[in-house]
Length: 187
Image (cartoon, one colour):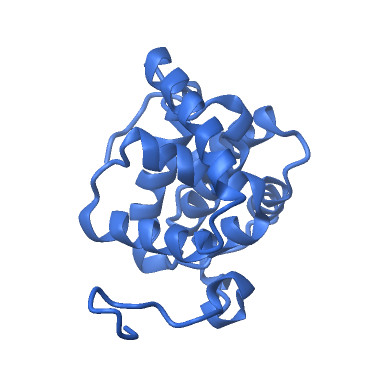
C-alpha cells in the first residue's frame, strides 16, 4: 500500500499521465462501441474479463480496456455485471482494476469505471480514495447515479459490511443459452 501525503496527491493518482495511451484507448473505444451493438454476449464477456483480472492481476491491454469501458458506459446492465462481482474479500483487486481504467480511459467513458472504483474503494475501507473516485466520476458525468450512491454511503458513514451483492442470477444479461466449451458441449 502506498501512502500519499495529501488528498490532492491521492486525487492526482487517478489522473493518467500517458496521453497517447488515452487517445489510443479512445480510438479503440469507438470501435468497441460499434461492435457492442452486434455482440449479444457482452454480459458474459464483461463477467469473464473482470474475473480473469481477479485471477491474474494483469492490467488490461488497450483493446480490452476500451471494450470494458465502453460496455459499462453504454449499458447500466453491463456495468452491473461488473458491480456484482465485488465482495469485501476481492475489493482491493477491484480497486486496482478500476483505478487502472479510470486513469487510462478518455473522459467520455470515465464515469462508469470511476464510479466502480469509488464503490470498490469504499468496500475495501479506503474512504479518501472513494471520495476522489466519486469526484472523477462526477467530473466526467455530474449526474452519474452510482457515484451519487457512493457519495451518499460515504457521507452517511455506511459501513462496507452493509453491502451484499445481488445474485448474478438476477442479472438478465447473464441468462440465455448455456455457454459452449471448446468441444461444442455445454460447459
